[in-house]
Image 1: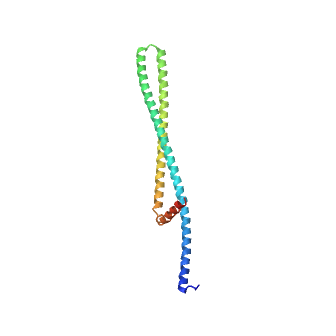
Image 2: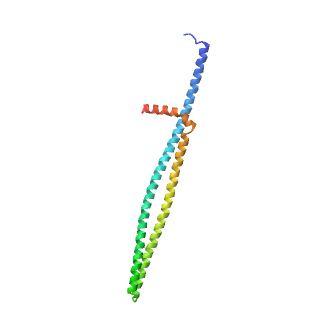
Image 3: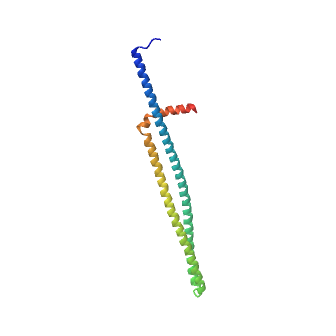
Length: 179
């Protein structure tokens, strides 16, 4: 075997150096890819958690709205009952003005109904406050989801993401071939 001419040996030496440098760069890019994959997985996990929490809060808000509407219906019914009771009381007063015992009993009935109305009003106010807090929390979670999606979009719009697209494509093809 003849030794290679000096130009050929020099060219071969340069090609080997470039090949070594290319292999080092590929290993560096693989390290960066692994870091980005972990970060993407973390962001996807956060998005999934945020979606799950948003779904829970929507379900809670729906339930609270149903409870609020039930309480509102009860409140309206109690108001109607109070109105009916007041009319009945006035009629009874007109018929039994002379009977002090009946009048005192009607007054006790009215006080009990007013207490019930006050309790129902307090319950309705508490439910409305709770519903408002749930809606604020739901909006906060929705805003957080939007922010996280924007971060993901901005990450994918970076130059490094676009420049390394071919590496991801190779990785996908190699991953598909191994599966």
